[in-house]
Length: 276
Image (tube, rainbow, N blue to C red):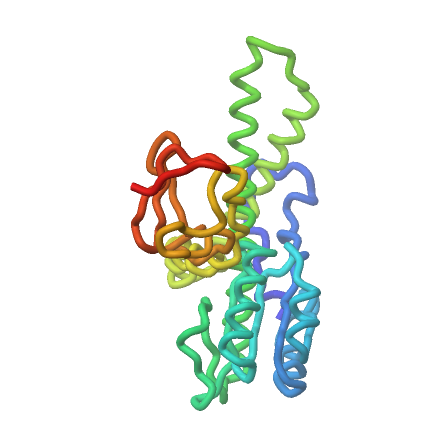
């Protein structure tokens, strides 16, 4: 399966250094939360150069999450609430991680957010190909994010050259990172099919839905607000998801609105506020 993963295109432009002509480094992991049978099958279909970590216990899976997770494969044998919590923790730890649910017709769960779903029985080769594409999609997204961030940094440094001293060595290093990332992106695009690229373009909204509940809410006391809405007692210390957010939103200077009941607080301070 090694040859199926992204490889350098012929005539790679500007690749004077041999290392830059090599396949993009595939350092991220595939994490699996499932029973022994699924774990064993997945290990046999994922290419050897990709690290697979398997867990049969949800707490152990969650404890092992890092920013280095590219694909999370989760069995629907777990409860809906447990899977939802694990998905949130996964994308909070690794925003570009792609989530796949491992299900049967009896355990399919529409309430758990995911990128794809695998319903047993699955064809071995088709399953392997879909997992690899999920993995490359995650790498592509992370590389694209890095490319844009580095490009912006380079542009800002170039604009400063007339105003302040710029470290030429650091600028050269960043340009090398940008150029290498561009080559990797071209290799990833050559591997991904049109469906995968389209899914990546629309992932922004889906990713927002995945990570919304994983956010840490701002401290209302630091903004001079009570811990809950004085009108409806809606908790303002907890993140309530994409729709309700932290429970309150700023309307203007010293004016806040409860996202649950719509009441507004004006001139809020820790000891004095009024509800309009």
